[in-house]
Structure formats: structure tokens, C-alpha cells
Image 1 (tube, rainbow, N blue to C red):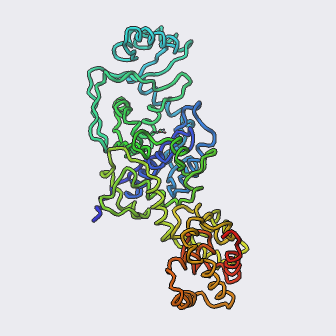
Image 2: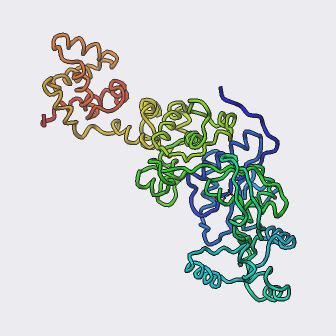
Image 3: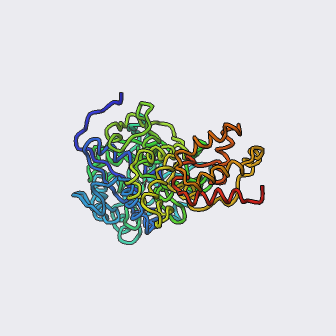
Length: 503
Ligand code: GLU
């Protein structure tokens, strides 16, 4: 039985991407888990755009992220385009908020101004390297550097008016920072190991760490679910919460999505090399899951299982069920191998049970390969004949080709195997039935009757017919194919086979 956990009060979670490019499926999975946790608890799912690093910002990225979430059915309750009462939801529009809070930390003596130029710092770093040591701006070094802790108040005043400066967190010595990660348990770090991180850059913009903590607090975020790459920042974030004397949210860091072979993080290049998408929607020249013919529900189902397990062998879960059974306790620690075949299999299952009408309505771009000159019945017959064979909607094009064109040639291997049974003679029998317009439902019994004298292996008979109609042994039920093709086209193909001079 699936365990249903109790609802919690006012859960608020956020998905906080930096708009530096397309949304990778790793990010999409983070968004999904946040969404599931929110919906399970009747909470709120918030989209916050973390765009404080203007140099890395990519123009189309935010629109892409918004569109991708929407295609996946992960509609935020609050976002830049749907502001709630905790906005703005774009960090670049919250500069004044950060100014206010950085001031608060400085006044509390928890942060300080630092005036060292990047050149000065890199010189110091070089000296340390020569001595095979690593330089850290922090507890051991700060008093010998140029900052408001080492300078007199007059010097500081003067420097603030004349020099560029950053603001750094003042980390106290001798502290043991212990933070709980919901996936990995307690993480412990000594304060000496952390440097006095920059909170505010020289351009007046906050760093990721500072903005992230301030926003999570102000937006009343209760649970932070994010990628494992942020685990090393966890202790620092805790220190920022402590400096403000704020309660930190609960943290959960998701395992990496690994390459199919299992070693290393899944990258865009892996997708290009192995021919699978890593983005939900097309990005530059890389096709997304959408363009390959995934149903977004199937993609969500697959991603839900990539790093979380429901505790049963079941693998097909509609979104409503996922919301009901999702439980962060079952998020796995180890990396999750990306398995495109598995993703396709899940999509195949969804294609199998999704009503044909819905497919025609929602994914017309994939149905265009069935000519509009065909009747709706014929388009529908072809789709329903082929749907059980589809793993991706894009495959409909190649699978339906047999209805559009007569075979160009005949599979030689099959031909060599059956030639001793005189396939032309066999096909001539079918041709006769087509000419006499004998209903297809009677073809089988009629050919069996004819074969009472001929005594041919029945397989060879069917293979001859299939070869004549399709050109090879692939494809669904051959009599249904003939039915859809209609008597005239069937007759033409049979006649062409008989008239072929190459065998
Ligand atoms: N902006 C960060 C990212 O893009 C968010 C990390 C977090 O969720 O705290 O990964």
C-alpha cells in the first residue's frame, strides 16, 4: 500500500532558476518536486527568477522557463507574471530590498565593507600559492586586509566615499555549523573552513547566497528543494540566517541526474551524442521532449521516478496520484541514471491510454503526417492501428509511411527465404480475391481453402502478402492495413508485385 502522509500547514516552496539558458531536465525535476510538495499540502509553488548576475543572463531564458513549466503543467501560484503579495519575483527588481538588509547586517556587526581590489587579492593569492597554501579571506586574514574591521572609522568613511567596495559576511571563529539536509541528514562544518563570502558586489548587486537567503525569508519559504550542487553552500546559508536571527527553512538537496552509463552529470552534449533530448522544449537547435513527441504528463511521470521512489513496483502515475503519494522521505541519496528507453516506455504507456481524440486535439503537429485529404475516419483508423507501436509521437510519421506510398522495393532477405514457395503465385490468389471484391474478412479462410491442395507453410503465404503490400515484414495486422488502404490500392500493390521483373 502507498503511504499517505499528513498535510502540513501553509507550505510555501519556490523554484528559483537563474535565467542563464534553457531549463535542463535536472532543473525541471527540481521544479516538479517543489510543485508536488506544495500541491500535496495545499501550499504555494512560487517561481522566482534569480537574475542578479547580469553577465550570465540570457535574454530568452526567462520566457523559456515560464513556457516550459506551463507546458509541463507546473503552473506557479506566484511568479513575475502572476505576482502575489511577496513580489517582485525577479531579483533584479529587488535591489532596494537587499540594500536594506545588507545595512542591517552591517549595523549588527555581522557584515563588513571590504575595499581590496581584485588585483590586490590575486597578488596575495599568488604569494600563498608559491608557499603551497590557499588564501582565504576570513578569520585568519581579514585583519591584515583592507576592510572596515581593519581600518579606523575615519579611514573607512573616506574609503566608502572614494573606493569601490564589497560587503562580506563576518564569520565568527570556533563555531560548529550543523545543518540538517532532508535527504542526507546532518552536515557539519567548522566556521574556520568557510571564508568571509561576499554578500554584496561592487556594482551594488547582491550575490546569489545573500539574495537567495533574504528572499527565501521574505517570501516565507518553508521548504527548499534544490539541486545537490548547492549542498556545499548550505552551511554558509545557515550562517546568514543566523546572522539575521531568522529561522531557516527545511532543506532538501536532490541527487544528480547522471549520464545513462552512470558516471558523471548528464549534460547537453550527452543528449546530442546519444540522440535524446535534455530540455523540455526546443532550445536553439536542440529539440526538446515536446518536439520528439512526449506527452508532458509522461515526462512528469518519468522525472518523478528519477530520484524518488513510490515504494511500490508501480511506475505509471498521473499527476493527481503523484501529488497524493509524493513523499520527500523517499527521495534517494544516490545519483539517478537517465534512461531514455524508460522515459520512452512511459510515454508509450501514456499513448496507449490517452484517448485518440485528445491526441488529435492536443498534438496536431504530429498528426499532420496523415494527409488532410484523407477522411477523418481514415486518419483515425491509421492512428488507432499504429498507436500501440508508438513510443514517441514523432514515430507516427515513419510508421504511417506504408499508407502513403507503395513499396519501393521488397526485402531481399525475406524474398530469398520464400522464393521457393513461389510468392507470385500466392499473391496472384490474393489479387484474384481483390478483383472479385471479396471482403477482407473472408480472405484468410479462402486462402486456407486454396492451400489445402498447395500445402504451403502458412507463414510463407502471409509473408508473401505482407511483402507485396508493405515491402518488408514490419507493420501491424496486414488485413487491417489492406482494409484501410482500400480495395483499389491493395489491388495495385498486389499487381505491381506480380509484375515485378526482378524476381
Ligand atoms: N538560482 C539557483 C539555481 O539556478 C537556485 C538555487 C536554489 O534553489 O537555491 O540553481
